[in-house]
Length: 349
Ligand code: SAH
Image (cartoon, rainbow, N blue to C red; front, side):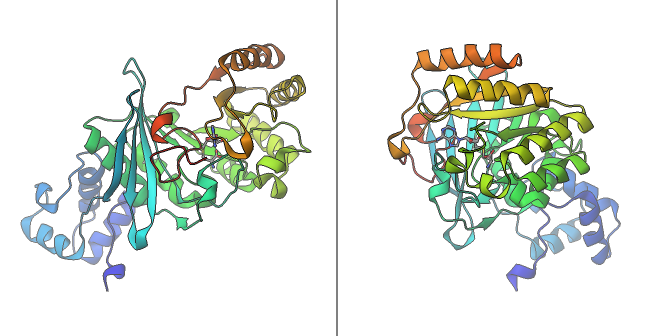
């Protein structure tokens, strides 16, 4: 009957209060458990000293507060640390700790799915079989475990690990809401980034719900005729509809949207691509680009040289007149950089 046990992790205060009521407890205990789990980060029921002992005993009978077991843990020279966590049935997911050199920003990159529902040709995660959506608590446990192991707290969370967050909308938004909650991590909404490869209905749902978190679209190819060649999501939701959704985001939420762009020489870095990107930027208005050098070598593709990157960034800045950031993609030698999350310590190309 283990599966039927209530899992307190990943629940809202209201859900916890309702559960506590079924145990004949006052509703405010819900808040105490929420704070214990996510503000004080207790790992055992004994640590919940503000709960009466008999209740703690009852809860420990019902619920085990287990950590996600660590599969492997690798530390890169640049300070990046990659983790795999074991889930039920032999499944595994990855998370990456990415401290910036000056220590001012410490980002945890977390997974939303086991494998991915999509199949982007340049991404190593796409080579794994899709094995399901993560529950809210499994998403949050990645953060708890990484913070515990590195002995530090994240300043930023990005949903840019394995998976397509908008294909696991409910659990991802609930996790982001708990990360943002003042009685939990209390991270600013702008410090939490949700990224999509272009699941257009999910973007509209995001706008309808006025989700407060940072939002990024992995654009990667501005040519409507060839985007499907590298991103299968485009077959279902074409570029026109994607750009319309981005325009709506900016218009209705009044916030900046980020376009991520994996630079692949010979595929999406020509002057023609830069002109198309300029057009998109003008259409969308309040946007910026984060460019990422390709980290994998499928199909004989190679990483752009530093000169190519510089040239691309300069031209894109002048064509788009919006900010272009060359995103540091650390952790390459441990397979922890963008698009390399495929449960191995090395580049899987
Ligand atoms: N599915 C979501 C979340 C994953 S984010 C999304 O696509 O946005 C992972 C980011 O890494 C995306 O911006 C993706 O385009 C980028 N990426 C994937 N493979 C890469 C690679 N081989 N090199 C560099 N970046 C890559």
